Length: 208
Image 1 (cartoon, rainbow, N blue to C red):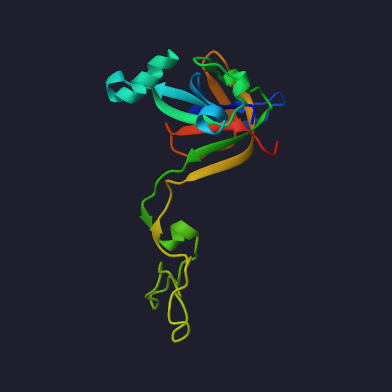
Image 2 (image 1 turned 180 degrees about the horizontal axis):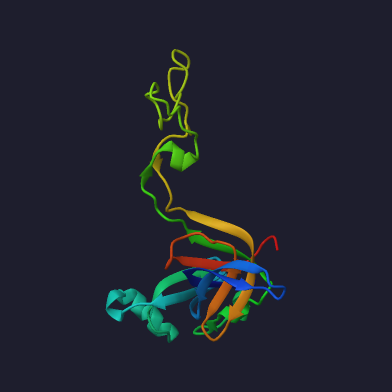
């Protein structure tokens, strides 16, 4: 992976292409992300670039992290993430900006989906309702759980009610529709995971 950046999802909008077509886009505040640490094989056993992003008050950052930011010569940030980038291309304190991507680039976006709490099988697994007539007493239930006497148990991985959302999801092969360097914005065609204000990682597509 040669290019990646951390950003914040701001919401959805739309832009117009040269031929007048409307393009739905997700607006992401991408960077600037200063490099706070470079992991090497000799010292850490692997290679990666640690970057920071987001505004935070210094009193909300613990002392070990404050020391790490001070060593890198970077103001404290809200998020720290490691990216598997080529370490030869980066130096401590260097800023990664949205301009690492350009219009037309294909990217993968990693985010955390909205948490929806405990939900039933209709919302969680898209199952159909039962009959809605007055004679039916079974509208939104799970349905048949298992056979009666054999095997006399519910199999593992049976789709049932439970926690839904708040999981890491990657949307692959999206297209960068526009780059706004002045406002540190990337406009990505289509939707990406997560709520407004959620942190996302935008990286070079593995399939593009």
